[in-house]
Amino acid sequence: MPEARATVAGAGLAGCEAAWQLAKRGVAVTLVDMKPGRMTPAHTSPLFAELVCSNSLRGARLENAPGLLKEELRRLGSLVMEAAGHSAVPAGGALAVDREQFSGYITEKLRAHPLVEIREAELDAVPEGPCVIATGPLTAGALADAIAREAGTLHFFDAAAPIVTADSIDMGRVFRASRYGKGGDDYLNCPLTRDEYDAFIAALLGAECAPVHGFEENMLFEGCMPIESIARRGHMAAAFGPMKPVGLTDPRTGREPFAAVQLRQDDAAGSLYNIVGFQTRLRFPEQRRVFGMLPGLGNAEFARLGVMHRNTFLQSPGFLDRTFGVLDKPLRFFAGQMTGVEGYVESASSGLTAGVALAARLGGLPDPEFPADTMTGALGRYVSTPNRDFQPMNANFGLLPALDRRVKGKQQRYLALAERALQSLGHLVETRADLFGGA
Image (cartoon, rainbow, N blue to C red; front, top):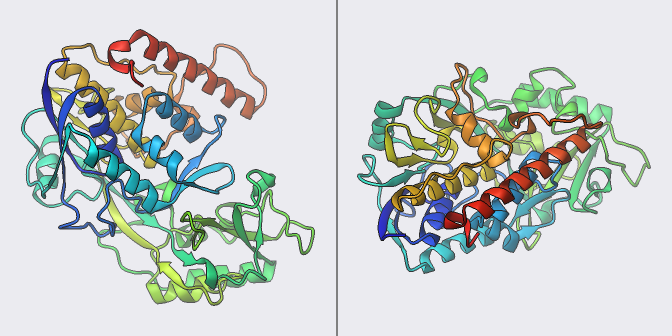
């Protein structure tokens, strides 16, 4: 492949993955990021690929759509998945990571690569020449204005859950277990009686929320719905959502609790725990008061309180192609949540797709045709297919074409879809050794 150079704007998961895929294919990369000189409201670490919300990369099994996507990325040589493997922490049937180890691994790998140049700068315009723009959903200022003029933008609101210190949890009031016994005792569970649940929901609905500029309930993303917004949908909505007790047995009673809140380990040392599904925009004092009503959290110390922010994404259909490239600018790509994919792994997938495709175009090679029946290919098709009600999308099996045979049982059907996807991906890797020979 002839010598070439590209710019990657943004060192989040998508930008780091794109830079890695370009560099491993011989393209010299200038990776530009404004950290640590300037941070967005959601960032606190100087490291690349910072996880600003949960530390979970979601389900790990093939019968789970994010699990399939992760396996596809592993087979395609993803740096993000390599880092996740080196920094995994217990999380039952999910893949969760130690934030610092995960981001540190990616940062070290990119800084050490001879074809990657790191530049700290805040861009005020779209880079000239071949580039991948992955500046994230909090892109602001002159760069956001420049992107909006070119692509048009939409926005929605996202939220992060609180994190508590392990030694402040009352272990006498919680129990260790994973749902249905999958993953051993990876989660701490706070069991609630009917009376405790009723009191908690009443306090939650009566608590004061922090004002968020431009906030509207109908602009929330379902995958990160604040717990107070869920509670407003009905008294039992939280009990059928993040507080569902299904698959858990309280060893002290031998019964399923009326409701339960799970705490997931957030670091390798086990000193921090994330309150699963408790994204919120409550004011900070209210978070301490209301969440302190949960069994085991009466004296909880919060290492991080929940926050909400506005995320911006592109009107990608009609603007991007299936490789996340701009339709009328073949050497300009976008990647990450700003394209309309939602989630850590989905963002990494878009970065991988964009990086591989840009490397191909710079080398005079045909675009990679990620099959429609793979999750990687399906996400590219989702953002590029006309859709009047385009909204951010997580990986899900509904994006894949139906099987050509009937398979009984949802889990069996999902597994069959995953097996078909991996077979198709294997064929792509074998037939495009010019791009995936080292995957």
